Image 1 (spheres, rainbow, N blue to C red):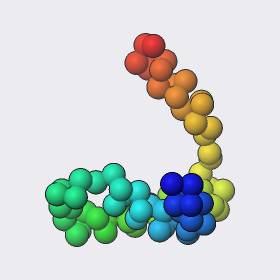
Image 2 (image 1 turned 45 degrees about the vertical axis):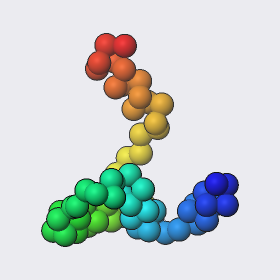
Image 3 (image 1 turned 45 degrees about the horizontal axis):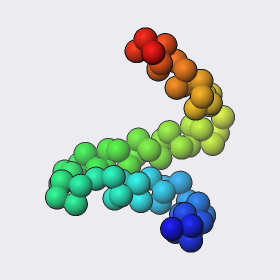
Length: 73
């Protein structure tokens, strides 16, 4: 498992996104190619925004705290 994780961490962001899609989607669930292509482009756009600095990064802990606040926990 550690070897797989180490190798995955060295993949380019686009390949990581593709890997996550393949791991999280049911093997029996079919995604229409047009939808899949849209999400691929959206993922690339978001990665480019983060890498260019045009989108602010929000720490995960801050996001989780905000979610907890919204749902009242």
